Length: 383
DNA sequence: AAGGAGCGCAACCGCGTATCT
DNA sequence: AAGATACGCGGTTGCGCTCCT
Image (cartoon, rainbow, N blue to C red):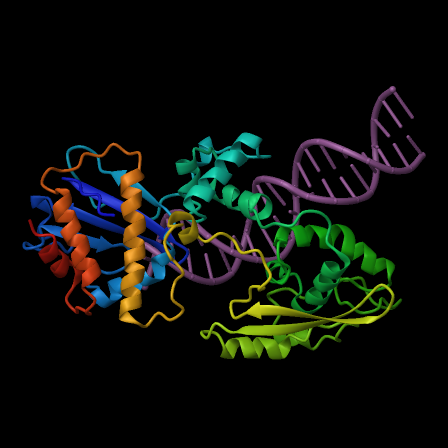
C-alpha cells in the first residue's frame, strides 16, 4: 500500500463511496508553516476527503466505507519537488479534444472488459486513461452498464417482464432506472427503448393511454403529460391502479424499517396471463432492493482478493471488524504495490522493514485515537 | 432495383445532485 | 462558501437495417 517515495508519493484509491487518497510524503522544508504542515510533521498522511484535523476514528470510518476499493492509480510528482499544492480542484473527466465518439469497436470493448474484470468497476474518470481508451469516462460507463456487463440479459423482454414494466411505469412514471432495478439483467436504457418502440404502441392499440394508463376516451385531449420524477409521488399514486398491480406499497415501508438489517422482503406481483388467468409471482428482494435471484455484479473485492475470505461483515460497528476491513484495504493496496508496473524510485530511506512496521502498527492497533492523523502518523512514520 | 420511410437500439446530451478543493 | 467537476438519470439523436412502394 505505502509506496514510499523520497519526494512525494500519492496513492489514489477509489470506491463507490467516493475518492480519497493516501499520501505519505516527506514534507519539503519550505512547506513547514503552510498547508497545515507543522514543524514536527516530517511525514504526513493525508486522507483525501478528510480534513487535516480528522481523528483516527474518522480515518477508520473512512477506510471502512472504502473497503471495496477496487483499483488505485499512482502518480509521481515531477522532478524537483512540489512547489504548489497538488490536487486542487477535480480533474476534468476527459480531454475533450482527444476523445473518440460514436460506436465502440471490438478492440475498445475488449480493453474495457479486460480492465474492469481485472480492476473492478469504479472511477470512470480515470478509467479510460488507465485502460488505454480514447473515450470519455461517461462513455465507458454507458458502454459497460448498457452493453458489456456480464449479467445482462439479451433479447426481447418476455411477456412477464413487459407486464412488469407496464405496472411499474404506471406507478413510477418515466423513472427508468427505478423500473430497471426491478428487472434483473435489464438496463434502464433497454427498458426505455423497449417502452418507446414496443409497449407504447401496444398500449395504444389496446386503447390504453401509455401516459396515464387509463382507457383512451374520445374527449381526452392528447396532451403529452406524464408522470415524471418531478411530479410528487403522492400525486402519482392517486392515479387509478391498473388491471394488474404490484403490491409494493407496504413493501417499501417494510424495506425502510429493515434498512440496516439485511433482511429479505417478498414482493407479490399480480399479473394477468395472456389467457386471462390471474397469476401471482413472489419475488424476493433484499433490503438493498436487489433481487435475490439476480446474477450479482462481480464485486471489486471478489476480483482483487479472490483467494481470501473477503465477505465484508454486515455490521460496521465492531472495532475488530473495522480492523479487518482496513486489513483488506491494505492487502489489496499492498498487492497493488507489488504488481503495479510503474517505475518509481523507492527511496532508500524507506526500506521495506520500516514499511512493514508501519503496516503492523496499523493493523494491530485497534484503539480509537483521538489525536489528529498528522500527529499520529508523524510518530508512526518517524525515521 | 432503387430510394424513401420507418424502426430499433446504441450512444450522446444536458440537467440535477453530490462531492471535492 | 464558492466554484469546479464527477456521476447518474431521463430525454433525444443518429445510424444501420428492413420494409414498402
